[in-house]
Image 1 (cartoon, one colour):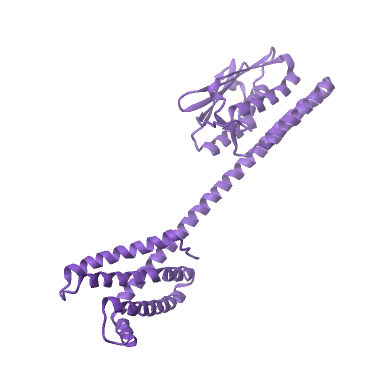
Image 2 (tube, rainbow, N blue to C red; image 1 turned 90 degrees about the vertical axis):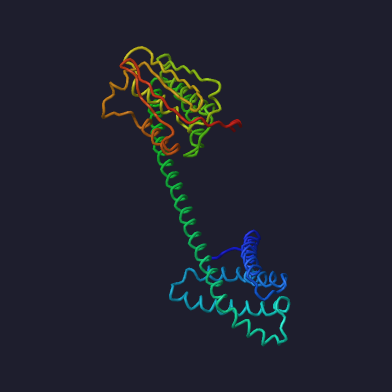
Length: 355
């Protein structure tokens, strides 16, 4: 593991040691019993900790580099690191002593004096840097683990959404091909037209990503292609009406959210005689968009438990849970004179037009 020293981090390192030097300077000014000049006291504290600031990047980088090793290997390396830190500190500090503590001794003699005088101080300074580096290592590990977990959860969620979509597309395709098969026997010309429209619809549907949301306007365009196919099959036996508020058209909805509702109404709750009437509405309040599909069929009470609500509704309900984490809901209701399915979504707008 490595630690990258950016200019911002180097500046922060310098600021921390400068702050410590300032505190030491205040302490020296208040407790000086030798009455040394103030500028000497300031330089002494500053040189001590600016030397640490100069060496800290090397100490922290070294601690990071060996952090993955076993403790019994790291301990002798930490000891070697301290020896190098103390040696480098004393070399630099001996050179700076000419300004804050000039003594009539040679550099070598002065170096030995500094080497002996600063050993205890440097041990604690070095230990503080190693502990800080180890804390940074642990922080990075936890951050990376959290990021990996979040990425894994996102990939899992996307995989589940893709699985739901792959379940929906064949389901829809098989139902439509069944309709075309019926039309081939009754009206080959209409069947050919339906095939063309199915191709157009599938091209749009397959372009949508698993978790993609698009404006209600675009969703209605896809729905219109589906309705056109079903009307070719049922003709005047299918009456579908839309009542969509203008302010709802730019609200974001999950791709292929209306088509399963309409398909469910056509397949599961059709009347025995007379036209099937389906009303599609969209309304907006302060915080939510409500999509509703109502029909004049037998109602959900007449649908046996074995048949359930169909693949489309179950699939859509699962997608809403994944996409909105409980902030959206799908509700079914109605009476024996008709069924009603309503979706309530958080109000999220996209000002740009769909491409």
